[in-house]
Image (cartoon, rainbow, N blue to C red; front, side, top):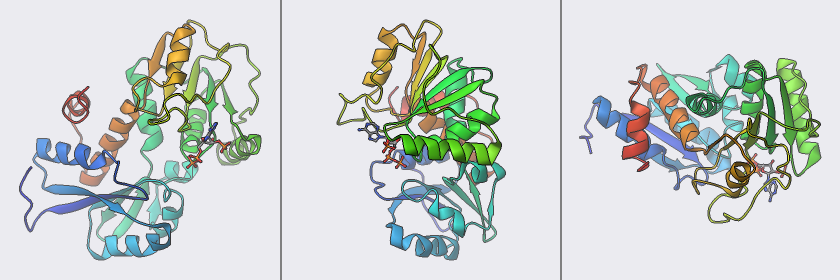
Length: 280
Ligand code: ATR
């Protein structure tokens, strides 16, 4: 561990719960590698204390914070400025303190998008099936619309939630999302729900995998287990590529770190984090 001294700048993730977050290990690893005098901790903040927490963050001159569930929407009201995309996503997961002004960003959707590109999976011009319509889905649906997906279908256990999300995307970026699968196949299928996450690893949010063929890729936002039932079934149905959520986790953190520090991380940092922090 690098030395913490009077010059050390503070970073933190706030959420409830927050103790299972990998962000402290990731950010502290990056700081150590880069020789940056920052320390990053995890702080549990209850919803009723969110306003006080952000005021304290500013008062104590923290350099930056990540925001995780359940605060990504509510925290927006406390920002001085919000990036155009975070506003479109309706979600802020990164806040940078610049001279006492708080700037809100969202790095989740871009992190996910970069993890797909890294695996050779395109979004532009593709037919995409998204399973789930929760807080994690909205930024990705909006970004895929902006990135030129040919079609986006949102399939969700509760139809009205899919309809609400479709209406949001329509209103925000003028893109029409379907809420019933109407195509015989999809180029990309994504699980954005927590179904299948450890310890309930037998769960799968999709019953019908007939949409998969050898030109389909499947991605899951879950990284534990490494291969969810969703990914396994897609693979067994012939998907050419399956991708878990580890890449999203790493890239959203790297983008946030660059925003916190105003630096550009070297290309090899992704592999170093995967190996040194996650043992992959
Ligand atoms: P959030 O991401 O906003 O915190 P969540 O309650 O974790 O929300 O749910 C995320 C998504 O997982 C939702 O699409 C949810 O479906 P509903 O809209 O029907 O609640 C989905 N989800 C959660 N549990 C599920 C299950 N057992 N089967 C299918 N979908 C499920």
